[in-house]
Length: 171
Length: 180
Image (cartoon, rainbow over all chains, first blue to last red; front, side, top):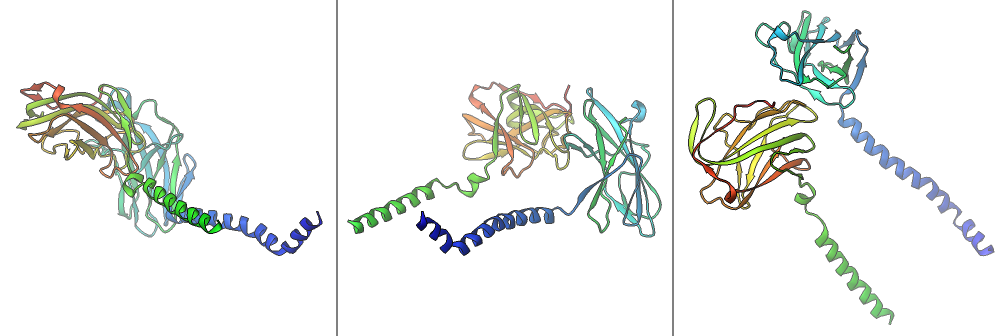
């Protein structure tokens, strides 16, 4: 018994060092992995409440709405599918604004739709480039009738990492 | 005694290292696609896409709805396909026939589902046409995937016995459309 206690006493410093270094090593490795992951992700999904507007790169983006496309609008829809239109208002500030095409995202699963170009006579733009006057983005999507609820992702060219995700009233 | 034991232990370790070296997977094996086995008429679901191969037939002449036609040894595949996660980069790019020693890609000549964008949740129906080399025989493997780079992705595979198929004088490719 006495020999055992002497061993612990003799190795007190290495034991303390071990107790500190083992968790520290695990922490350092874990931190390094997560840091790599976050550095590789240059955007951050930023939720925007329904009907609200977000300011990005001097431009006012929003509000965004999702509406049912009328049957006579000319969007080809298969049986079991329905046509929705994502509409986002983008108002440039002092600088011109550039935005990608809005994307429709199913909130529960993350499934995402790319959208189509509107048929002949379709009102609104599908994206914007160096816009200096207000733009109405209006993009039709054909989705399965049982999909949803949806949100709208819209990339706006600016310095920050925010990728706004507009929460919308479901049509 | 102790010396002999050291030798035995040393040789055992070298042998073990050789075994481990043999068992280790190559890069190609580590990145091999996940194969989803498909059956004719049944829906096969991979990671990013779902495919239903409805019919496979051999033809001496094929044509498409636009009026294009060509003679030769053709394998025509009728199928439904949809993507499951995202419509981003959802072009049906990997459509090939593995003949064992060679690989034939689906022909780009007729209007077909080859390299068409797939929709999410709403299947597209259509055909693929493969121009076979004259000496192609036996069982070949139809391989379908979303991206041409198949590493670590899933690929739907369907074995096709060329010898068991009737050769039709003429087959018209289906016009690409929504699946019913």
